[in-house]
Length: 234
Ligand code: SF4
Image 1 (cartoon, helix red, strand yellow):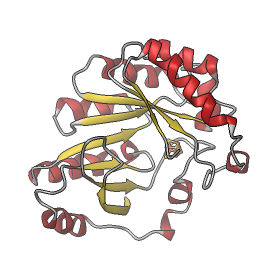
Image 2 (cartoon, rainbow, N blue to C red; image 1 turned 180 degrees about the vertical axis):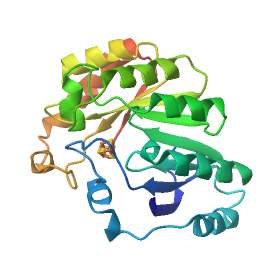
Image 3 (cartoon, rainbow, N blue to C red; image 1 turned 90 degrees about the vertical axis):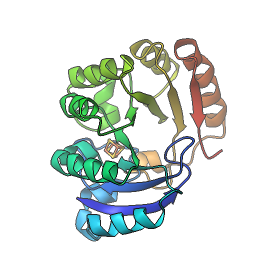
Image 4 (cartoon, rainbow, N blue to C red; image 1 turned 30 degrees about the horizontal axis):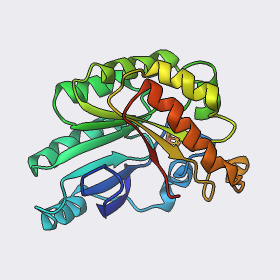
């Protein structure tokens, strides 16, 4: 279900003005998740009906370029996602999907049906046993790899994104992820935000050296994906 809606955002889709809808389910439980309350306690948040969203989007016609589907993991709500994509497209707007990449078949289906225009897929760790720690769950790595390969084919515009969570991401991890997504169109390294992280360990204040470290990660990442950017509040 949709539990939150932002009418206008300048930061959720690079180069575009977007509205953002938040789905309330996720199959991962990442220790650094910022939206964990929405996933664990969805009933604390009101259900947002499509008619409300539609009205707001119609008012912003010509101003908002598209709608970002995020969460949670939107693809946990497959039927709802297909429905809302169709409705958004009818309004003449574009759709960006934020996903953890664990539903490659659904992703493929959305791409084939031209229901989405841009995919931002998380690469939380190298695609090996380290992924389980980053996702807080046992992950089917084959599914993550499938989604990566699908996006690398370039049938749709996309980016990979990695939150540089201390204890999960280090230089070795950046090299390894770089190999996993070599020559991708875009890779965004994101600074970890401790304030509202799910696990207490990840809420600890960051060492001032942290920001220097992620700039080093950026240099390494560019060796694998030229168009790597640093997305951060610093
Ligand atoms: S995949 Fe995203 S929404 Fe789900 S737990 Fe991880 S960070 Fe949170």
